Image (cartoon, helix red, strand yellow):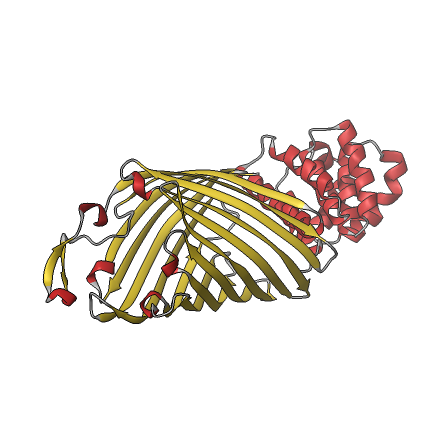
Length: 442
């Protein structure tokens, strides 16, 4: 996606007006008049008024601040930087001058300097609403850097929670087996729904390297480990790695990514998945985005190769940002998981899914989110002991909030409810997970 500095430059003016003017400016008739012109959107007129006085008044921080702002708003960014540098050399605590020079640096493409100045302002005693705006513009600087230079981003997080069915097992103690005349068989205690508190540690890093304005290379690696207070046989861990290419042109972004995933169960290899994902993203405008994708994965189960399969997922999603900043989205997808083993069609399945969600305006200290999903799966053959073909319907609901209590830190409580209905009782289950996650981005 093409990155423009202009939206930042234009919108930043409203934020920086929150900073109080130096008292000397309000007492000076020339500066008072210049300020009124700037407030009225007549920056060029303010610059014409102030520029002839530069030789006589250079070094006056109030004068240099307004001259710098008028120059920047008139498109003369370098001239504005010179004036604001003079103001800061005399009055380094002039927060407005420092914030405005950050705006000029960003317009000139000097993101490192812009970030440094914005962080300096953020560390000062400024109103909370101004601090939130500073954080939003620091995020904008990060996005520009991501699109224009090699960047590495990472995270670490820890989660504490409770899962009332961590093995996705049935709750009843017995089940009738049609192949044995409907006789009831007792389900082993360890195979029934097992409840436990758990802790998860996770971390990862991503790299993005722009080759030119259209082409970028990407790579990432992440991992997590989940342990429960009880039932260590259900402790899980995973490692994910990916590498790919991104091609952007106007409002379109195409990507092709190779992916690898290894899941461990009770410290033993459980399943490996390796494959490719192709995606097309189209931005209709700043508030509407369409995404389509196709994903292939080869599934390899350690010690259970009868379960190995080729898995295809394909679908499309749409996201819309309301004028107030809230985001709503939805997606639809299809699944085709084809078993590799011959004569084992009951292990493969086809299906489809729907997902909807919403979140409050991003960039706020507290973001609320909710999602709901439905997935239907129909398996390919009859289960020998149940004398029927398995058919599942799964419903998921998730609610949560993310509290960004510092720029790099967030705390996220979440609750998820899952209900899987199946015509084979052994595969039907309900599950509720509540958790609290502390995350550090860097």
